[in-house]
Image 1 (cartoon, rainbow, N blue to C red):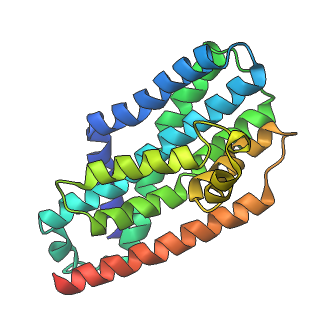
Image 2 (cartoon, one colour):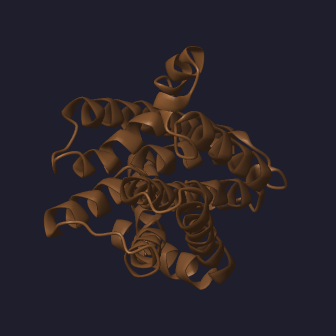
Length: 240
């Protein structure tokens, strides 16, 4: 049942070309505008922008995927799922895995533009670690998308997800490095999951290593949001 549900959902998501194009095109345009114009010829700044925009695209795709739950709830899909062998934990896990699937194209396209248009040069290890970091760092946002999908109404879930995503990106240092923010904003930044996902994705640029503390915090955010998503599923199906 789990494999069948995952396959059907994957096909449905891939056919949603509008969502895939938006989450891929937005970071691609931003990396060209910010990386190609705003930061000038600074190679380190271009690397920062490329990885940050790749992460932003992965975040956007992951949250949008989870947000489709609101539409499913409106259609009564959860009532149908309650009659199947699919467990609450498997349902949430499938949604997270699907979010990871749609988070791949934005990272690939943004990195390709960074290498070709911005002439970003990294070692093979840095490319791999930054790619995996930007992709896997979308995990807490996949869980967050599921939570939003259970709290928001179908006609407002996209607006809420977009606003939340942009806010977290801004305060988490994806637009402006946290070190350039006022002190009180730096404190706020470290309270957001986007700050730590950025640390994981960009840490390989600083000597080719991964920030262990950031990984631990990222796992904590993912687990916490995953538990909330699981509880919201159980509450929602209990009311159905």
